[in-house]
Length: 114
Length: 118
Image 1 (cartoon, rainbow over the protein chains, first blue to last red):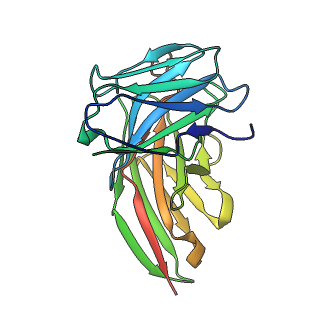
Image 2 (cartoon, each protein chain N blue to C red; image 1 turned 60 degrees about the horizontal axis):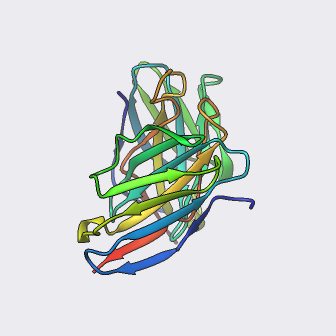
């Protein structure tokens, strides 16, 4: 597609359930990033992919969070046993690769954990 | 390590006024610097970027920013704002030149919400 696509746009779940968030980057973009945006706060870096490998997972908050990327394209962020503090907007971005400069963002997936 | 500090979480100005949004950064290597804008219920989009060319950078919608190495600043300004500029603005620094696992990761400030009043 023309831009970064994320799904679902909204997800309401119960505490303890697992959720999967999907990101489809711009075609040809080798780098993919996940950020978390909590209410009234800035963007918190979660994980970065170059191709299918994740050189930097330093931002994942706990071992309940994991992410994968297949075929150098679509990425899935999985949150297991969700907690209320996981409620946030999860933003995905892609770029042509390191050194290319700007990030192109999707519209985000808003997660609400009840 | 890199970091970004945006001074002022909320700025309110009248339509037609000059606006200045402040950003200071720290980086262990010469940085790339960005300003992004986020309109309500949308993702972020790039306003402008500095990548070591001219220190005064012009972006979309009449915005511009000046890179000041000695003050480690990258403040955003617009001479005359419009109501449609009401949004959240994020400053970001990227260590694009740094080799290794951190290459390309952007660090964002906490954002400044700009409200333009009629």
